[in-house]
Length: 295
Image 1 (spheres, rainbow, N blue to C red):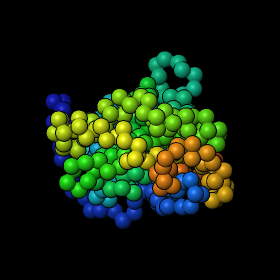
Image 2: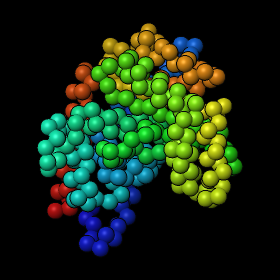
Image 3: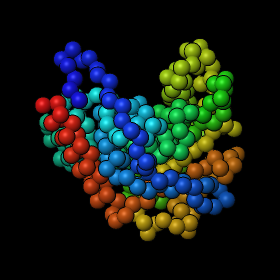
């Protein structure tokens, strides 16, 4: 869809709903300390398009597409946005200028964070407030934050903190990075970042600024908090025994019931890095199609 020089936006045409969400999500067993989420891609072309749309800064519209099960397409297209998104989806290890991509760990990390966000949107629907994935390579801090409100929006009933890791060493990463990060949150270290992110989400959810500021205090209440650690894993690690090995030690987060420690797995056919390469190629091809429409 073309965008005029004065940046007027044109409403996209209404299209029929599709039948298949991009991910298949299901609950699986781990152990007495935690519960499991298992994700698999069941529509890779749609998944790649949604990641491209998120890379264009349009996560809000991607959420709408997921909610309505519409064919994946951005709210609007722009050649500069497509170029920026393509760079975000491309691997460049040498760091030369001008930049044509990002190191693989950053590229794959962004894509996996977007997939984690899509999984949460599918599992919890539009009734939750969910932090958008990072689109800036320099962004640090919370991988994800989800807030569940009472039906009348009068109180926060659950806060979920995400750690999303696409790594070649998931067990070491869980012990050395995820658990320490969760423990900091559990002890309410870096609480100002949590409160500020929650306040922004609550305001986006239509809550008055004053009420949002008060409700944001609820995210510091550990009795209303859930943690979700997510990893991309090859199919040979898709078993209860392997999940138990990976997530052993989750009970370092004390004072929580089993259901509030979640171990999530994106199960991938073949090698993990090869799969992300192939998904990125699809996303980049889609961005090229959008650019041709702009020409």
